[in-house]
Length: 217
Ligand SMILES: [Zn+2]
Image (cartoon, rainbow, N blue to C red; front, side):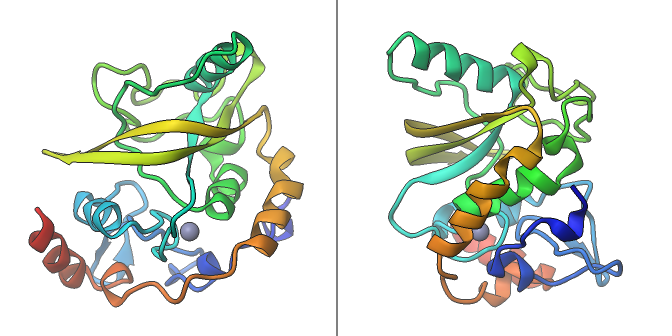
């Protein structure tokens, strides 16, 4: 699927854009007017975690479940647990913050490393004791590229990074290709009205983001 054929959630469309016109995530830091897509900002992740905001669009997550995209190994592990009829508890902490259903489905379709099994991750995706590290192929386990999953709640702790722990698995959408999420993405966009604009401290003003995070650290 071409990028311009994938419907963009309104809250993502409202994000600041880079020079090419690509929307910039709420957790992507800016330096001198340019976003640095290669890294995520711990300050911005902290602000999103405390204020219960989507890491992609920066607007409120509301009271319902929160969503994430998990890599192949974790997706396969969740699938095995569900087949066994047990409940899944994510005991491993992760640096990857939650977001809206529509935003995470969109990410799974458009992010090169999330959308295709052979893509490689550019950054460490988890803490050192977990399985996903720099340069590992994202896909492999049982033909899965990953899964878009929802949890009832999250907790987080602040150290050098912000570490999340999710519990209460309530939705599991495994996939081999990001394109498989098209129908679900359309539905999520329809069902999820935009929760107001992103706050000014999660746009392109890095000092504003840092100031906000300092209050919470
Ligand atoms: Zn969002």
